[in-house]
Amino acid sequence: MQNICFLLDGFQSNGGIGRVTSLIANELCRDEEYSLTTIAYRKTGESLLYELSDQIKQYYIYENDYSMTQALLYKNIISKLKKILQREKIDILVACGALFFPVAILATIGTKIKCIAWEHSNGNNVSDHKFQKQCRYIGTKFANATVVLTKQDLKIYKCRYSTRNIYHIYNPVDQKLIRNNNYLGNNKKIISVGRLCYQKNYPMLIKIAKEVLDKNEDWSWDIYGDGPDKQEIEMLIKYYDIEDRVVLKGQVNNLYEIYQKYDFLVMTSHYEGFSMVLLEALSNNLPLIAFDVECGPREVIVDNINGYLIKPFDVKKMIQSVDMLCKSGNLRRRFSFATLKKNELFDIDIVIEKWKKLFKNIN
Image 1 (spheres, helix red, strand yellow):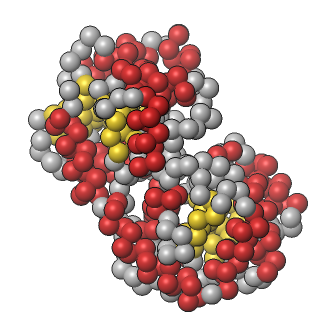
Image 2 (cartoon, helix red, strand yellow; image 1 turned 180 degrees about the vertical axis):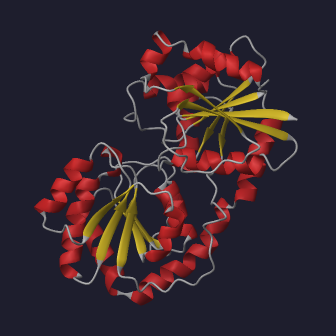
Image 3 (cartoon, helix red, strand yellow; image 1 turned 30 degrees about the vertical axis):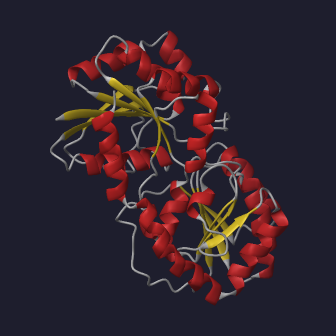
């Protein structure tokens, strides 16, 4: 039996890392060859948004919200992490996100524990945290393997870091999301999902929503998520006088059930790693519209087949594309039907087999 441990921020927010880690950990623990442990950076007191199997052991390092600099310099994160790893006799530690690459590597130095650096952003993005570039370099240089989410990232990493131990594994579709093609597309509602922060580019989305909804008075647009830019976004919605038609729904724990109430999804991100939101909407047979930013959208959306890929950041073209989907039920249904074939790439059985192969062959 291999003892696998995932190190991440936590499972309390509508974020892609917690979501996909819970999917993979839950699936792995069904195999008797694996024992699973998760270590969250902090315990917030909030309930978990993503369920973990009772067979998975769960730990957290801190009860308070320390910065990583504080944790490294003053709060003994390396010794705390190493103590848990040794107690559980971990064989492989998977660091989920570049922020955790250095601490995972430092905690496994001098042990027989193998370390995997699992990238969740794209290789050219350095805006998630202050030392992202340095963390990524440490991960690729010292980890036993690095996992990236897209084919484009695989090329970026191989070119930039000149190492053979880089692997591409897609995030999986949650089987709970997949439904038969009973899409009707007659709700007249648009959905966007994601943290209310710079990455998701909501100020541009609100501008687009204003133009689209003025042309389609019987449509509405809901946004799910929370974050530091909430007040700014609320002010923009009020400024454009669309408060009754663009609604911030906040962070919810039943997101999976919600997609089916909408006709299509729109994303205006500055950048992505591999968007779980696009994958979830795809699994619900929703047509998709997104800017063709690095690196995830082009791996989920086939332009004019299951949605639209728009040149970044062509607001005029985005408005036209959203407007076309609002006005044509036949177009929405054609795009929806095409999502069925695309889903096969992200089948969880295929994804899990790739992880198992990596665990078996890591050295």
